[in-house]
Length: 230
Ligand code: MG
Image (tube, rainbow, N blue to C red; front, side, top):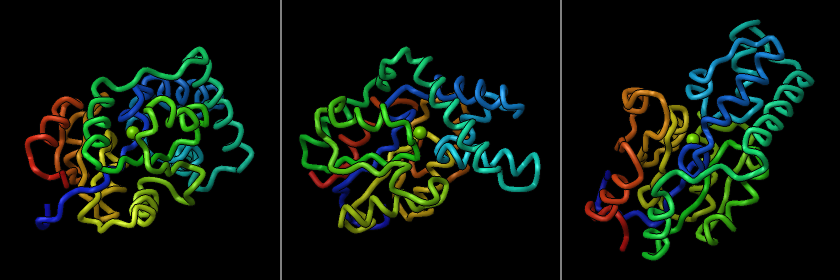
């Protein structure tokens, strides 16, 4: 930490941090893009994780055509992807990331605020957050609250502003390189938990302050490091 200030609020990314939803997101993106003539792989999905849906489509369209994607194409591909995501989950919520409930309960029990900060516009997941996690969240910032989305710092800045805490009192838990970039650009201490298929070096390259292999390791560090205001 930059000084002796203790953490009072933790901002959690959603996909790959709360829900083990990235494998289905990757498959849904691959199917929706490919059937619309856009070459796209699971690896592309993990590398782009954190962008809003329209942001994902626009990024690859710009790479292929050097211009912004037409709005109708964005809407069509994103609707298709969202429907595939629901189908692949068979109408159920994705499993939780192992150990994340323990992290949330430990923080909540100790009076540390927990927030969700996600680029997701997947309404079934966002609407389930309060029920699924027993009302531990103080606030939720989703694709519906931001203009730019990650890797822009906007979502994390919005959470920080709404929390009312100093930046040194806030911390981020991310799993994605672009999410880590957004959090660091917002000036926040960032723990990356590598729950996906990319190497740790992708998270270190975005200057994550800490990289953990799983939630149990993050929880142990939270308990041992005296970083929290408990
Ligand atoms: Mg994520």
